[in-house]
Length: 510
Ligand SMILES: Cc1cc2nc3c(=O)[nH]c(=O)nc-3n(C[C@H](O)[C@H](O)[C@H](O)COP(=O)(O)OP(=O)(O)OC[C@H]3O[C@@H](n4cnc5c(N)ncnc54)[C@H](O)[C@@H]3O)c2cc1C
Image (tube, rainbow, N blue to C red; front, side, top):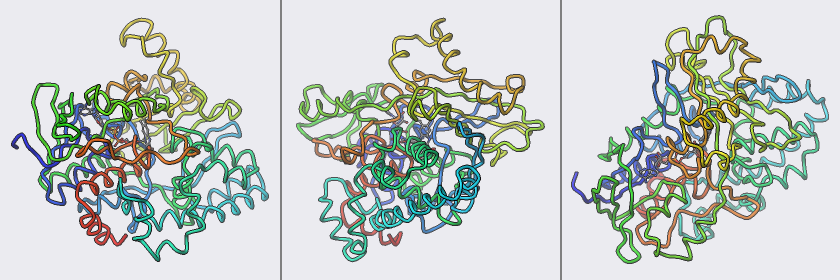
């Protein structure tokens, strides 16, 4: 490949890969530059001693069936990359109320609720579902792939014309927070905590700060009759592989181990990048899939000072503790793929080490671990503060002691279920916000910007520089796989123009 391409993408997170692949599909010469030795960012996988570990996402939906409202499913379809998945319907929840097996789909959830909280709570939940129905229908009528950064929202809505008319009343909720809807319609304490937990898992923030459109869409997917969750065979690495295949199928390239140190500017126009090894690559368009704080480090300090100051002030969600295990599964027959644990509702869903997500993907995909063994990834979802870690040196005694102390929460919860877990382990890796920052390459090991939906939407992917766009968890619509996939598509639309966008929507019948 020459040192000039049409589109250079900095970072191979799901957002960057979606953008790069759609640009390649439209005939552009695309190069994705990834700092890490594996593509995928938060979704990258790695193999150790025969165990296929995941580093991030574990909850997926909307991948098994078509049509799907999941932008990732839409993009994979456009790229001709089918993704084999296993569908399942329940997960374990360890909450102060007890050990629950909670099903997606309205029937299973209501049955559990009836036993736990009684008929009144079920009736309240049903009414809440009815309130959300028009909001999720409004969100579905305006697919994220139909939006383009920089273009007037009103103009874009107008172009969808009659399809939006029946949803005008519900549309006012789409840009706001979910909390006020919950406050108005849910009184049962368990249901309020449950919704707060779901919000926190989606956005890294409580319900008062989580976007209503995202939650209404999730409710439509998870609590409809016949709802299911989908686990991609091979885990998140298989999703990354499908996107890389889609990119390469159209002539694009992903280059790992290639850290970008600088975005080249010619006046107010981005014209390429310089890599850490000194290599310079020219491009007609540059897309940054880094987080917003890291993007600023790639631009000259004196460039666009007002925008820079504003971006620098973006508040960050907290970070993660991780536990990766490979263990002997002999006699462990009824393990769930996912367990969510909450210690004490009264501490708040975002309190430190008060919530855990535990994922054992080999329960559904045995090929992810050696025969008779399981692979496990547990994490504290965006509730670990960065500050106590920032001055510690990995490998030093204080770091190791602190890590042991903080990660003890995983063992305490897991040993309730598997008392001899430590004896069964063949691989044990504990990770801290410093590990998270190192391998996922995000500022302060953060989940992403902590931008409250009460104050509006995430910023779109435009920058003050011509030829430079952003995609990923720092941009609209926000954090999580479906949103970052959509943001990648939006950056591609900005580069490719309205006709290419319309062709894509027509092909997908959106
Ligand atoms: C532990 C965890 C669990 C999660 N669980 C879920 C879940 O269950 N469901 C869900 O929907 N979402 C989940 N998420 C969120 C979701 O995974 C992320 O929001 C999403 O993957 C982020 O994608 P992105 O496009 O923003 O890119 P990122 O994943 O942030 O990737 C950016 C890439 O850019 C690279 N990069 C950065 N700087 C440079 C540079 N200078 N040069 C070259 N490359 C660079 C990085 O190495 C990285 O690969 C989870 C996230 C985490 C961390």
